[in-house]
Image (cartoon, one colour):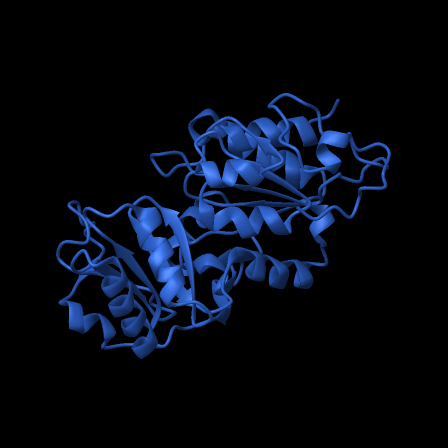
Length: 301
């Protein structure tokens, strides 16, 4: 975590050192009247802000209203491409910038317009897949791609998942490389996600970025892509610093997000790797963990 405020005697030592803070421990109040301690609130979507049914609970909506009323800003930072997260942003009346595609996209939700979008070289992606399969020695991977913006279609091979969603495209393996793409997703039926990710990181070191955002989905992205990069880009435009930011997440792809922010919160349902680096573990997304922390920070005493 960034520790720009370590000299502030009002900040408890457990927070200053980045040690885990048990749910219920009070974070510091604003240093001056009307000034939120964290004027930027960055949240992941799936497994964090969204419940399992992909809705935002009434309690969480009310907590986000407290954030706005205090003059703070909410910034979504999600692995979903802009085309896939748009419906969720509209549902909560979201305005302004959002970090999408694991940091590869900067999206203006108010104007429904992509400001920044990075693509992945298809030949490089194909090569990383082949080298990962060779390193694993366990047969072919099941694959999916997200096509280039603005469409950002999710296209999968036949056995990528047992329950293919109606909106997903279906393609033969070689057809995945027929059009520009933004990322590749890999999974293996018998090899653990961690081993697939390790193999991809090893063979693609310096050429691509690899992250793990959901069970059974290892993502291969353009080199240098992560949520911290996208968050820095958004924060620069919005005029915020890491020390002014609190971030919430649940999976290893949120490690850069929490690492960039001045204070990082892992959900109770989070991956152990994220819990290990978080300043605090909140209740799970099903228990409105984001709201629990925001109420503590932004509700009037």
